[in-house]
Image 1 (tube, rainbow, N blue to C red):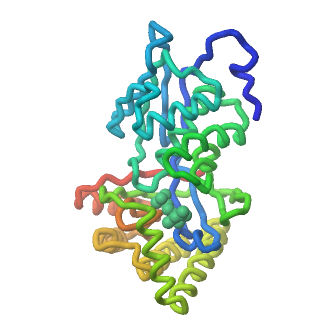
Image 2 (cartoon, rainbow, N blue to C red):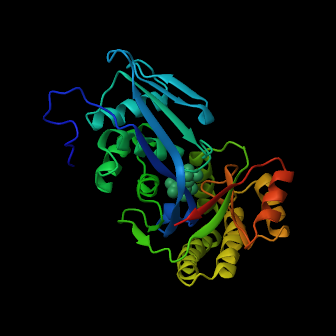
Length: 317
Ligand code: PMV
């Protein structure tokens, strides 16, 4: 990668004053993607913004503060908080400054809810060092140094959409393909506030597949078909069909055992309020509900608020 911001210079490495990154949501294909089926992910615009300012003393430890994620970390080398380690990994990978800065962030993404918050952080940090003009491939490569701290061996899809936004189709082990978005796609992402473990959810599917292969295998295949049907629906701006695909996919995922009562009843409420479709997104078992809203989303938003939940309204571009 080209890292000409700080290389070959005797100057103290610096950070740019501002950087941002998108979040991510899986539109269709979660869980089936683990078994080689295609999945579709979308960038959530304006996911995270970071601002950097130098401390008076360049030898003081850098501080990272993101109030919405309850983060206030002093980045000393012995701080074993995963966010502190990931931050220093990304800054180090880019030959950025490891001390002497205050980095403040603001985010509308829920953290640890399948919305790509960790990838957004790694991508925005890489941009703080390398700048907005850096090639996307360089930003992705640098950000993966951070994502590996969180997720060991990440697929990289979160980092890709955090960098480029838009919609991408991906198949495990193959390069991702961008899907042209002809008209902005409005979505509501509803955080349930219920924590979930991606690893535990993936294990559930693996065990059900082992017990009931002749039933579960066709369900995984059907989810793969749903991904490609969703691409056709997005291409033709057929939101009624896209919504129906969301809803059917929720039922398929539910039959794999990865929904939960709260997601099921939230989905029912969204549909009763006029949503074109709704499904769990990502690992399931909690996390977020993804809703394709009608032209006037307010009845759906009100229905979610009546349950004490605040939907994130986005337009995928
Ligand atoms: O909720 P997330 O962002 O962790 O998404 C998990 C997606 C799965 O398909 C369930 C797992 C995977 O590795 O693709």
